[in-house]
Image 1 (cartoon, rainbow, N blue to C red):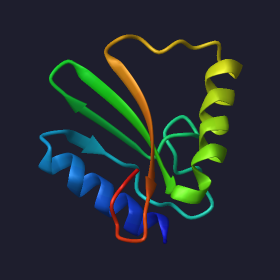
Image 2: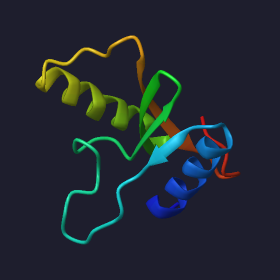
Image 3: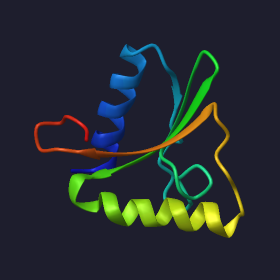
Image 4: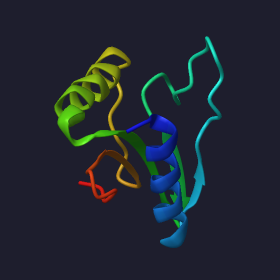
Length: 95
């Protein structure tokens, strides 16, 4: 499934849950991810969530990508910040 479609479903689901979301627009020949890793950032109350979107079959690869980013930059995740990887299934639900 194309990234644009996955992002559209994810943002719609998040907004329905009361989250304020931002996903960078697709720009040809430039980096389109937040920090080069995440596809969507969303905020609700005191919680901030960074989400990497992918297909279910690529979840493990994306987990390694996020871990490498955190290790390379010597970052730890604060208690009010979440990092999630969402894999879309064929029925357009997320794992």
